[in-house]
Image (cartoon, rainbow, N blue to C red):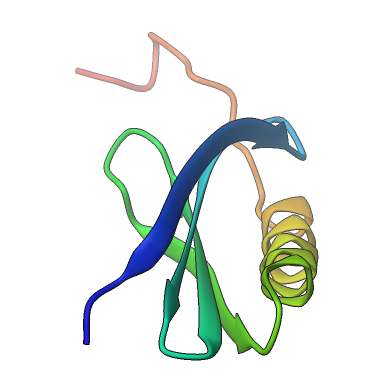
Length: 79
């Protein structure tokens, strides 16, 4: 089987750039959220409809990114 109805959406969640990819294989929709620069996967989901898969992956991604701590970049700390 091949992926069909492939879509990519770039957005921002909790202050982080995020790319959401969705596609259908057979009767199942798959969605994946990753951070744009290195492309590391943040969350994935599968559902019977595209909307359900997107809602699930966005919910997981928002929760995980909101819990991610950010540290200020300091030139003094780097040598």
